Picture 1: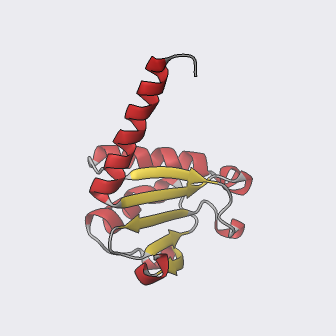
Picture 2: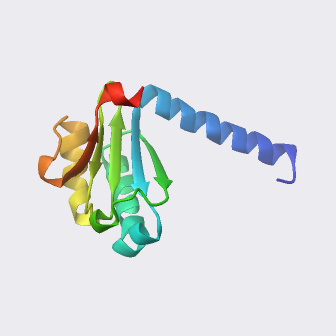
Length: 124
């Protein structure tokens, strides 16, 4: 960081991201460890961002390292305010439109792709 302007820009971006997280309560996490990237997690993340943009859904999309279930990569966690955390496995880009429509728009979990669940009370 070389100037006050860069610091202010970084601050504004962080505040905007925090506002989206607080307003929507939706966080989508993509596992981007080596195993995830090798399985296509980068393409999956881009597909998620495109689909969210297409439906004008505001959500905080973040990446993490290895989530720990490499055999199920690409892994995607979806957390929504007041609901449990759902981990989906083998989320390839062609599965993303259904995932976004079923889970975020219609509020239904895509049961056949779920590899783990964390109930809301366990998050606290």
